[in-house]
Length: 580
Image (cartoon, rainbow, N blue to C red):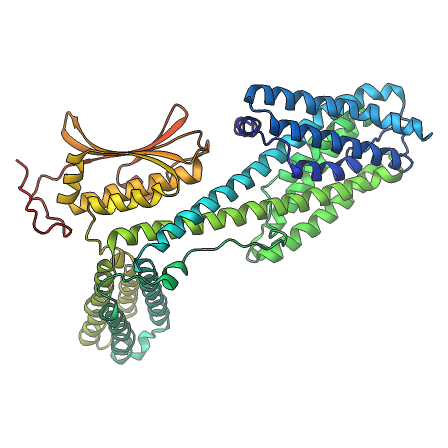
């Protein structure tokens, strides 16, 4: 609830509480679940008055949305929006009765008017707030993805094919791991020494030579090639198709349904029927959520969606039947079936839209991360990584098979199982063996990274010359600092409202001696749940994410190496003296 309230506050402050999506959702809700119901009310007879009232309500909200966009003071805008929405909701029953009286249609009893006003005042702000939070989340994801695409394009436009070569090499290493894993699974120990010798000679030897040839054929430098670099940047789809349907969070449909129907139910239903109805909604939603997530259906997104919608339709019919059993008659008995299915469909489409945007963001983030790493590393680590994996397969994989065949002419089941486990463990090491090839970085690589991001966001940098000298002298330290800064800039785009950041690299004195500090400050409010992933690489480097007022700071400090300095390849003529 606290996160929901904070999200509403951000939406109101940004001037996006009311949007076209709010108006689009208002119409069907006004004509169905928010239509006048209750004892003695003929819902069907009041349809013309309900339609006219809905048109007036939508027009009033539209005018309020235009006024919201014109107001610049956040406090004034928040007060106007809150008062305006409450006023429109409170006047809605009065307008409804006015249209009904004008056309000589039946008017609900006067005693119901206070309850109807209270219902509208409670339901509409809540519904519009939920729509605003969801629409703002989608809008923020789209805006962030657009900026990430711009960053990815900047990185891809650089004269560096390392991204493409690194991607192909990783794909080849993954293919080797998959093929060898299948070969190990197919290996039959009953075949004797010949079988394990063939496993080493045919499978491990083949992939070892294949990776070695790829390393030998890799270019010695990353020459410009526009078609190759831009091919790895995900492009935005301009299709107008509906988002994919995904299962909404557990209980989401029940919460929305109860929030919209409870005010009416409190004045039209007895305590026993009310409790039974709430229990039925919770039970139906829980059953539909559980069945659709069963392993037999969850393996296929389409199958899970079909089961979920079918279950929602059956559950809606059951709720309509319960309404009939409770003594209601007429069109009102059909509303639960229609509304429950509509809520389930809307929740699934919203979940699908958010998931698609988040998947695109993860893909873009991965592209940027790989591009930044490739810009730092160049082609050399790719060649070295491929050679290491080839040597691992040749030395440890093929060698283990040959040695086993020579020393175990008739292996036991336990010995064969031990060899199989060793080979599987070796295959699983391929990816990490490839990644281990990392010669480090230098101050020039960090400056290039900052120059790239500076073309996309407002970036202010503070670089201590002593710290830059330390980066040139210690490539491994420069690599770690580079990774922290790159992660901080990516987080600044993904989680901050304002696309501004401050970067500082300096040397600070501590009780344990001088340390190099890398810090990225994201300006503006950040997402409440923004944090480093447990498996984050920079977390392993000692970086921590903390709040500092309205800003968020990613910071890490590193001990300065005490060994002999390593001269950067960028400046071979500059000999660095070892630290005193």
